[in-house]
Image (cartoon, rainbow, N blue to C red; front, side, top):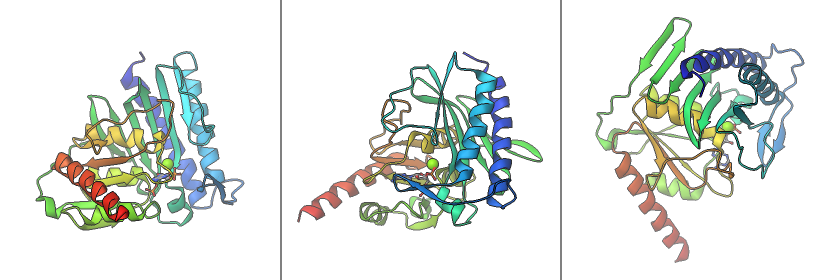
Length: 287
Ligand SMILES: Nc1ncnc2c1ncn2[C@@H]1O[C@H](COP(=O)(O)O)[C@@H](OP(=O)(O)O)[C@H]1O
Ligand SMILES: [Mg+2]
């Protein structure tokens, strides 16, 4: 087992380097700038996704090698790839929120997580346009770093359930999710791109709940692993609707089903209401 704080120090440096590189593509100042968009399983990919993936992988592999660590990046992952056999696996999303990156909303993030036996133990989420980097270690709390240094973050959940605000995806929505959201006791909604930006909005207490519901496709390990630890170490909760923890590097990279991330307040009640709404929706489709 590596020294977690030493590992974190290197990962933070890699996160900042990746944020600078990704921003250069966003702002059009990168070398070989040509943001032509390709599609892989209906999800867009640009040269920026690939360049940042190469950068993060080469930096981490130089620092940590291959003997004790495995590596999974959205851009190098082959579909149907088997579970990585290493005990410690880096799970990387070089550009989370590619659609928002292309559409210039500024809501995109970089995720780097270290997973030990299916659960995250270290995480970095960088938000280049905010010039912020969030980091967490298992049991060590969550921090936000800016040019002015690092500060711990702790969520204080103290609002009535009706006043909670949901963050929702701009691009991944369907009829089942709309039905579910309408049936919750809280109706304030904010559309934000990227899972990293949605979850850090909860950590910053600008929102309270994020719900992901798979349809024909599902979000992947790299979308959730780093944001999960950033949220839970700040005092939030992140589970399946049935209360089970998410697991990563299990052999199926998809995160199927309903996932709920919250500021912790009323988490269990919201999970129950979400499950109930899905039962009602299924019944309404049969009638
Ligand atoms: N139902 C779903 N199916 C596939 N991918 C999903 C998904 N919901 C979220 N995601 C992924 O989660 C990221 C953020 O999506 P959104 O901005 O809509 O919340 C995107 O990743 P990438 O941008 O890394 O491809 C997107 O592909
Ligand atoms: Mg992603």
